[in-house]
Image 1 (cartoon, rainbow, N blue to C red):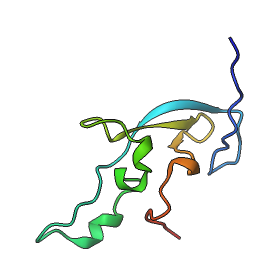
Image 2 (cartoon, rainbow, N blue to C red):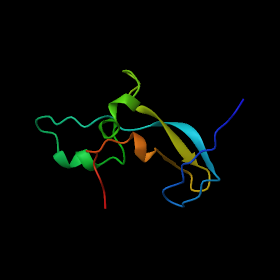
Image 3 (spheres, helix red, strand yellow):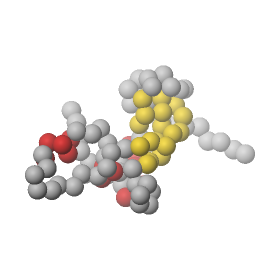
Image 4 (cartoon, rainbow, N blue to C red):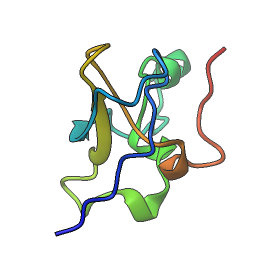
Length: 91
């Protein structure tokens, strides 16, 4: 059995030694509706509509994505490669 090394580095600490694959739960896609505060679109770090559709699971599991967990930082993250070009960005 051949295992390929992870090439992802933690976006916070830059270390790759403590990275492991992890299934992550992200927020539901943003859908505007009458009376809904449009600022809430930016309330989550990552929503299902920020991920390329081909990387989402079938309903009702579309909020679970393959990602990574950094044991050093204690934070989960996804690869930039699965994020959509039109995703929300924060400065």
